[in-house]
Amino acid sequence: MKVPGFGVRMARNLLNQSGVENAEDCFNMIETDLLKIDGLGRNRISDLLSFDDWDSVDKVLERTVKLGARLVALTDPDYPPMLKQTYDPPVILWVRGDVAALSKEALAVVGTRNPGSYGLSETERWSKKLVAAGLSVNSGLAYGVDAKAHRTALEQEGTTVAVMGSGIDWVYPAKNRRLADQIIKNGGALITEYPPGSKPDAVNFPERNRIVSGLSYGVLVVESGIKGGSMITARLALDQNREVFVVPHPLGYLKGEGCNYLIRTGQGKLVQTFEHVLEELSIRLQKGENEKAAAKPAGQKWKEAGDLTEQETALCRTLSNETLHVDQLAEKLDTQPFKLSPLLLELEMKGLIRQKAGKYFELE
Image (cartoon, rainbow, N blue to C red; front, side, top):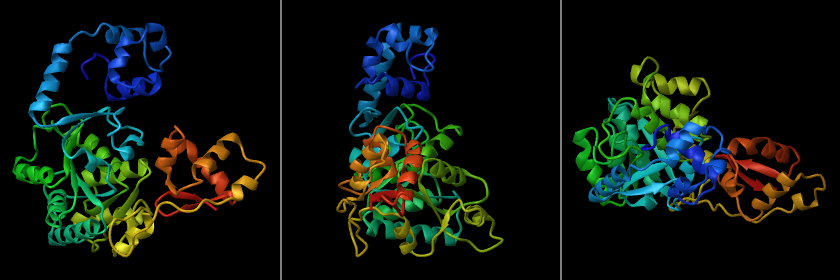
């Protein structure tokens, strides 16, 4: 961030609490209003209101345009809705390619950079099934499982999104530059939260992984050791209220120990067939016999309940015309998913709503 003292989290906090429509409006706020925002002290406020290095901002914008990229801010209507509902969404995304690809129903496919033949074949098998079901394939453009997932999606004429741990002008690893170009050419997208010129530093990739999972309905871990980026992505997915699917591996196979650990500890769901994934993801599919409609006729039982709180009534009314994911519910009710959990549980116990697979809810 260009303003001293404003990292990603502080900038997001400012945007969320100020209620401004555009980030630039923050610079025109008065000090008394800024003091009402949690975490802002007088020093940060002074730095914000006195900021005048607009030349450097213009240079970033000019560089972005020259690279054929565009900026998508947290307040932009094109900002991916799934990512926006996570607890730590980037304030700004740099995007090359079709920005609409970021909002497609998707599953992330992740794994080791050095997979064996089993890992590669499973990556190809699952990626083909995802594309056939009309889902986008999200991953991190790394060697191994990531690259295989992207390539398979392209070969199947599907959509794929690559999340980078560097600037939009710095494809890493360099050998994947042609793959990156193909992703853009075929209607997918490259995205990053790092400004142009940012190197692919090691510290960037754990942060990058939260975007890979945040964009997606769930994460499929194909092959992973007990440590590594894929395990981080799985943990982030759980924190973000996403599904974690895991391909099982033979005992004693070191490259698959992480997968078996996730299954053994209940952090991931063992999947052997695509139906196992469909059982958990109650999302509208674009192709095939397993297409599921998200909208369903509303139940009426809640209208007859006389002991509902104002919040419970608002929640039921929001569900009156459709089945919604907990993240979608939170967005419509202008709250956070974790704050809805006790309300949803209470309504389930009253027999007024039911939870479907994949954390979707509908009225009884």
